[in-house]
Length: 482
Image (cartoon, rainbow, N blue to C red; front, side):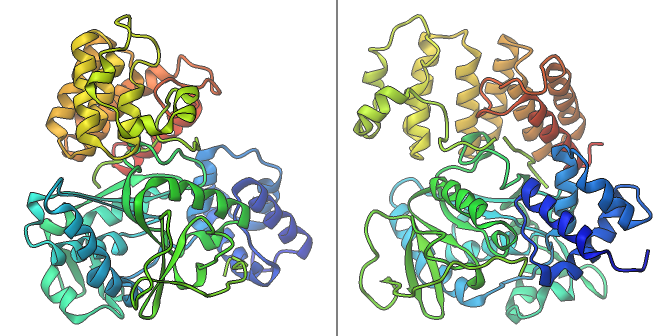
């Protein structure tokens, strides 16, 4: 209908959206909200958006429906090299510092674009990495790009863009890293596209950090123009999870309009020329022109509304389960875990047999974690959980073929290992083997159908069976398997 919704109904709708989805719309943005609801109504099968809104406020939406609605309420439009001063800081200081620290040891770099929309941001980051590391193929580089909307993930994975995506971007970017497909379209070079892994993830609902969805031990996290949609309480929750997802001294970027000392108090603010970013550090940055602690006293930002591999895994403050009593009492043990320590473990494979591996993986010490895991496998050759953990670490090291072999051993030992089917489906999807991927996703769904909706699943970071079913379905949709 063309008439505007009543103030009373808009108040009910905005209250419902805030309580159910933690998305905040102030009254001065209700006209914008109404336009978005008109488009959402059509996807939900309504021709009258007033009828849709009346249904909505009395509904018990499942997670899948909430994500469809969220995809209409949040903006998925962006462009390359957005906020160029941030990319200047990335290229001039942040990447060179990381490269110097890693080039003589484990050549490893991990970047996450959270809320990646149509992909311009993660591809911009891939280009920055390519420019900073001439021998990038000799490095283990992860650029993870996640979003709540499977449809735009599919679009992003194609790497094809129109002129509007290049507004305000440097001229060299399009000329050097894209090829023209027709008069108005440009395709990113395959070598850049392959550097980015697109994955489904709901920042407000899913578990991170976690090696299961490759969101742990990140060096750089971009989460720009995403948090402004959420309530302050939810922003703080997401900010803490992203803080935990960073490696020590990792970098966190939000948009200029989202900067807030109160909401991100766990981070240190670092001033660059015309850009402020956050850093996870125990100490304040050095007092120099580029690494000077910010003295800016922000008021809390009001936040008034102002493919690749598809993986996901409910909210947790830990990367992987551990032995809490021991690790809380002796946190320093995680700094000195060795295979010698594993030899003291009982040979009967108790439930927490893998805790040394998990603690090392939590710290991003993948080489040590893998060595420890392999030692445990020698002692407990028939434990499918250890092979699954081994596969998770191998996958994080971009050793996909070895990870596939470990997952096949997992499923040989336990054909009903639902997380094994899910992980193997993701790897097959990443390799373009869609038929095999579909088979494993369908196997996972069939096994999960045996569980109650609210059952907590083992080896799943606290996910319920119902939530994992929704994630598998969304992954299949994002990978064009449905």
